[in-house]
Image 1: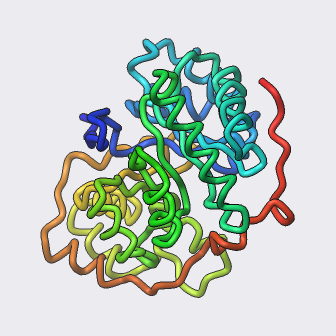
Image 2: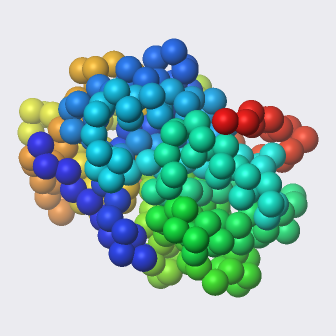
Length: 293
């Protein structure tokens, strides 16, 4: 399987499909990462708040690949926002991974209730980038108003904004803003897993449009969704701990959807968010103390 990549706005290449480890327990994270790298993934996405960065690092070591062969992405949690605190957050994450440099470091939430701290945190990311300690910087769950405020106050345009994005929730206006500024859209819950466990009325995996397209290619609905992301120029980070599913989610580079099929998937958007509203993420409600390395 060949791995498709995208070019970030600073020229760094990022694999189009990576393994996500959100809600993956530490005791199974290492095996999932090792298996993904064995199958051919070269991009692992985690976060300080997931509590499994150390196990991701162990998976990287067990895979036996050269450091520059794997793209490692993680996120700074809101407790570690602020200039000095965010610089130290890098040290904590890098220490847990066992690496000197992180490929992509992003802010996990906009923390709109204390956005000055967010701006200070982003300035720390700019410093880490300038010093060569990270290869690219970005954000996650930033809505248009958050991005506009950040862009007005910073000197480096985020390389990535990682957002909830699947056929039932596509955030098209936000995607357009990304395109206008050269920001790569990166999808979390890219195959709509959140529609399965979020209590929604419809699951993407049962969608007749997706199943119909999948049947034409002998693929699964998940593979069709991931192919949709890749063809429309988005990075996607599906998560799984099951070896067969890990392999299936990576096997999306050997077929191509037609323009009509892409349009049919585009038409599935309901505008209904599955995850929390970004502005609801506050220190009062979502405080997580990130331990030292």
